[in-house]
Length: 562
Image (cartoon, rainbow, N blue to C red; front, side, top):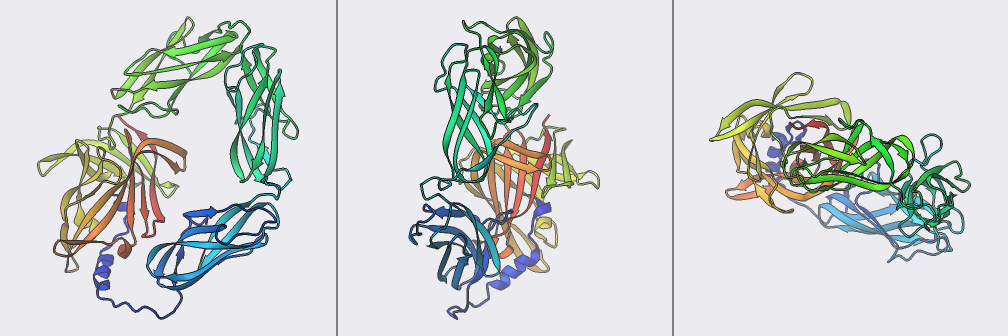
């Protein structure tokens, strides 16, 4: 749990008790009240656009629909509609008979005039959100017979297509096969038909179709032809994209081997780039690569590989051209068996050098002394928290807890007491201080379990106390929403994707009568989600309102595990 983000106050609990005495009056035909759910961009969430939309074709009310959620705070009749854009709109009427999230379906009316992406504004009560609908051309294409408007994502020096990924092996005088493709990124501003062609060195890459959505998207171009010359062949796109090009490395005929040396040989490989996270007992994936630098004197085919250490190795093969400072990404394979720094020897021909990979522990909340993490709140770089594991420990209930210290800019202070027993991770804390009781109530709870499946639920013990003279007994309820999934955390330093993440939901329950507990999420308008990455610890905490909309968050931006 994250006390600095908790929205729970004792006044909420007292309010909950008083609410049990209210009388409900219904059936007065007054309009329903509530709010549309939306994300940070103002888009309705969750949302679904159903049916196909074609310019000049009338909508079918039962087919062309949009669905989204409404948080209802007062039951009653409702009318929800959109504005009219491009000759059509969506609307529906009905009666909300239950509070909380309700899914609503709006039926389409009218006929779209032309192809394009239309942004509809949905309104209910005093709230608004947006939904985008893509209309195809009358000929079945995204642009209705007109060409899409898009730009290749380019960069580099000079005018190289920074997004181009060349796939397959290319050899002089050998015809291309189905494995020879190039993937490029394009930014589409207007949907429609497209044809993308690039040629050079006897090679041709093409792709044709329709863009039905705007924004950045990848296009895979199929190769054909026979490369006539070895080395780096420049392939240039046809107009209007002819300012953009990319290189295809072609091996000499006869399959000669490339000759060169690894940068840094025979000592430490330099420069070296270790990509991805490596965790004890977790299999390597596509993000686990190591970039080594080579200086090539003779072009040709190559195989660069390492020895196997700790159950893991790295390798790459393909073709190299003559030139210095070429970076080759070696793909990792295997499953590391032990945490700690592991040294690998990489070989290219008669050249070799070494590099080190840190393998993180198989632990969802590391507690090794000196390990530290830096967090920020709500993407604000200046609103940060530094946490570090202190050498000291705390004894309580016959257990030993590792002490964490935190610094929010005012100096180091206690930041929690933690221990692990098998797959259970515990925190020792003052529940009375967290809940707003009149006096401290110390105890422990299990904050995450790493040896159970998704949808597992567990409860803490009850924490009994008084608040302003009112006796209360509150406990925590936990549920694993997702197990070992990838999660991308966005902070002021950029986006970082963590694998093997456990997502834990935390809610509060109040004992309303002896032995009877009631979820008070709607009453206090708060629950939490904690994200724990294997080998790293807490990477994200979200404080949400009862409708599931994030109100505050704490994001990991840097860590060091010792």
